[in-house]
Amino acid sequence: MARIRTCYACTACGFESPKWAGRCPSCGAWNTMEESLTGSRETTPQKAIKQRPGTGSAPMLLNEIPEDQTMRVTSGMEEMDRVLGGGIVEGGLMLLGGDPGIGKSTLLLQVCAHLCREGRKVLYVSGEESARQIKLRARRLQIDVPQLYILAENALDQMESRMQELSPHVMVVDSIQTMYRPEMASAPGSVSQIRECTSLLMRLAKETGTSIFLVGHVTKDGAIAGPRMLEHMVDVVLYFEGDQQHQYRLLRAVKNRFGSVNELGVFQMTTLGMVPVPNPSEQLLSHRAKGASGSVVFCGLEGSRPILCDVQALVTQSFAATPRRTVNGADTGRVMLLLAVLEKRCGQRTYNQDVYVNVAGGLELSEPAADLALCVALVSSLKDRSVAPETAVFGEVGLAGEVRAVPQCERRVAECQRLGFTTIVLPRENLKQLQAPEGVRLIGVDTLMQCMAVIF
Image 1 (cartoon, rainbow, N blue to C red):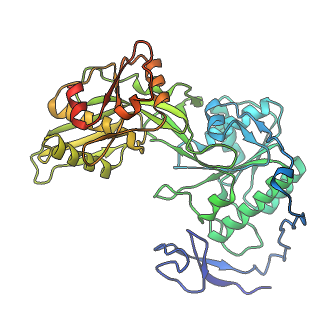
Image 2: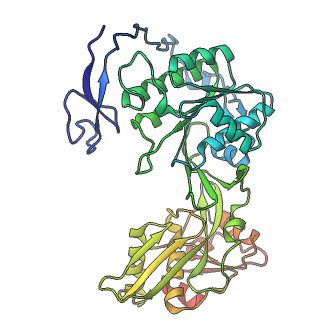
Image 3: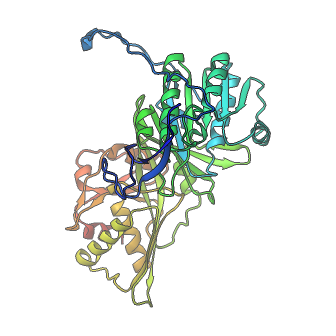
């Protein structure tokens, strides 16, 4: 029997040390060393660690390697297939993370139901809920598929034996933080348990060809709980985002070995579960208040998809010693920078004004192309003059007040034309490479002052 001892492992990189430290000696992260136990329990028999043996293959030239078309299976939801790169890959290990109650289990249960209707064998393993709780959720979602296998188990060796008996095409593990290997003395959710459980599931996925979905808990910072190497081990990392008070949910791919990253899928929470939104631009602009000051339409890019959203700003006189700056859906530092540019280059005095910025629909604007739309919304509210409802704006703003070019301008213009916008204000550099579509007026600007003169 191995002696049980205490060690400290870093949750960011997995480094282990016999002594606690405030800063990880390996990656330099602060306050990430957590206590864990290593060794074996006395009542647990020793079990050989199952590691995949080496292949023993010889090196091959790149042009001599035979091409193998990756087999994909549709999930039944077009938005999820888009994020995955075309569908579920056979033998892929996918990690889905998100806040509690955001709808991760609901989404995967709907995917499992569709796969069962297509004649595929699916195993849903839950370490958090009982089989009766899952059945209640399925009844609420009106899911009735007798071919769906439910297993309430968190011991990985038991789950492995049941998986080998059934040989499912797809398996869901909800969640990876609740799984544990009995031969390890550490508690479920510890760094060593998560690392070993994920390693075993990765081996099972590659050897059996079963596609495995892992549900991951997130920390208060929004990152998936556990060691950072968990995201390096899996093939696909998905994040399910959104506000529980709103009906829209956003599915993002931050890592995908089988397709492009930064793709976005939009879902709507209903009483029957997650419903894909094939045209999110119309949904996000459906409740827009036309003719109101401080509102402008911006065309952004989420992966390869252009999405139109409503950028709102409210600028009002402040009676406090320090004016308030509240930003929702954009970077606060970027908004502060744009306020300084407006005051220095355009003469718009905001030092005594409370500023509130909001992006309707729960979207997060991270690309610099939203700078021009944010500036127009701020000046519109400051002057109390509305922007024409058929006008869309996009462009990057520099510290000198210049408007810089943005990528993939053709897709943005085409999306604006499809939704009926007749006037588009964009950087003049992009205008040189574009041909105005029929019925659309393209206005190129070089500076922020030109943009304000054109719009107001």
